[in-house]
Length: 402
Ligand SMILES: O=C(O)CCC(=O)C(=O)O
Ligand SMILES: [Fe+2]
Image (cartoon, protein in one colour):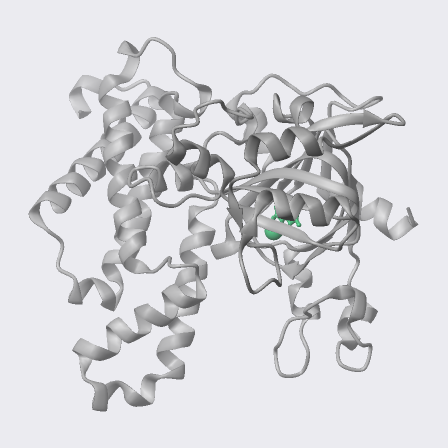
């Protein structure tokens, strides 16, 4: 590791749990905030039983357990990257075992198994990354999620990107090594050419087309080994190369700590779209123009537009109020749903809702009475909880205020 990289690594990367590293601290919201505050985080955390069952030890290295994977999941139909036709997973495994450079990404294996009624789970989401508002919301209609399996031959790669709608991601490695090249968000501007196009693949970015990339970026390079979980903060560009036959499980996710970023990303994108097609506004008329802008927004953001954002806020407003009402009566409360976490979450949802209501989109989509009542209640709870907190600080009798 060169000096620049080791300096950047100590600034931006936190490691826990490996040999010679601090052990993984007990999960608390305080630790969670420190670790996931715009830093890459690496935890030694083998996902079980996948790490055990999906691999065999070969010369002290874990390799895919092809017979097991074939027998267990061979009948699933998959779509490897760059292939035009889907194939059975067993065919995919045959190609990978034969050394073909083939990569299966974003495979919703967990969801497919659940749909088949195959309830044997192959991992449990670690506490550190369990406060997941995105998948909790998507689980309500059951047809989509952001929980994936990645499986690929040595040399396969996910080229430079920032994660879908600026979500967080985490990736837990089962076997093989992943070489991650990360760029802190302030370096994003150096990753584009004069036209504003972002580098497709950092391995082939030409110095004449991308001079700033070659002159000004300080990538952070991380080798993720089997049993290690990498937390990827929002807005960090990254490229991932597989060294050896590699299997990993990953999620995209979000929570109270990055929904602002997700909202701001949508807002910026929508402002850009409105500007780009602003000249057609009069001829199209408001009724056509706004849905068109939203359609473009969804196309750029994997289906996430303002309607889904609204629905997402309604869902979490209801969920948080329910958790608040249950309060201390709940028997076991995970730390990311304790009183403070619920209070913070309610504050975030209220603030985003207020912002969304100010957008011209809201004028075209009047709020139903039911949603209005929900958000009014949320606003009231946030207000009284703030009053209670300041009363506690100043020693005022809370009963007088609330
Ligand atoms: O493992 C890969 O190929 C890509 C993973 C990734 O980009 C992510 O987890 O955000
Ligand atoms: Fe990614």
